[in-house]
Image 1 (cartoon, rainbow, N blue to C red):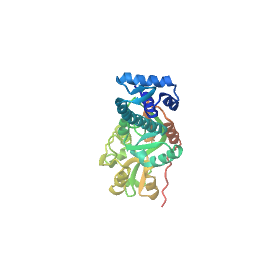
Image 2: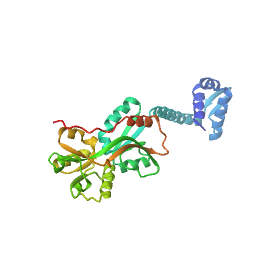
Image 3: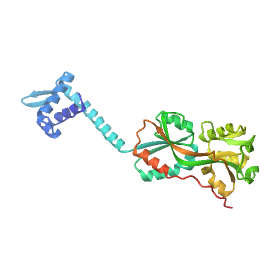
Image 4: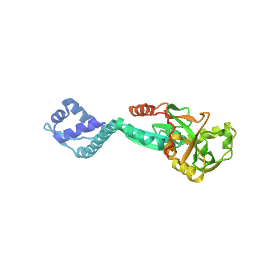
Length: 300
């Protein structure tokens, strides 16, 4: 028994004749007769009495008609909604906190201009959280700065970025333009949380140079880190993109890594088995247009 059988049955019941139902459905009369016969055999009951070449619906037929109409209506509604659904692309983007703070609003605006009919969802977390959601298929793509560990995920480096050492205008480092690793020994820092790509890169730098610092504040958000730098005299290792305004105003002073070890890339990440839809390819193209940030100048 199929939806087709039910639609034929409804047409016969409402027209009262096999021939009229066949005309209505653009079918042959034998096809309609066979469908009714198959229904009666399937349910082991008569749906119509045939008297003097006329059809009279039985009690079983009336019962089936009521349920058949509801079933066909539900099926037609399902078809309508799913056809509408498949015409609308959906894209679930996960970004790290750094990217979510300095790039995501503009990126989403550009994406909506390019793909106005795509339904977007954005999630902001650290690299580890984005990676886990990609593996659970809770996100379609991620944009991260940290290292992706799973071999099931593909990472495409697309956007250049670099970290700087940040301090406030009264810190002893405010008169410097650069530093050596040993200068950082024992100093107070505000750090990102564990799982952050920024923190992982800086901690690897400390390990390689055998430097110990004092993490006095742990902050998962850029604004909290900037406040710790400005008001609590902490140092921070942070993307230059996040402190451009503060550098121009003079509230934060930046020192560049002399060896460019803190240069990095923002990567587009997706599962190796993921179908690359038009929306994902559009996002990739938009990301490829972003350039490495320039050093902002102080404007007194």
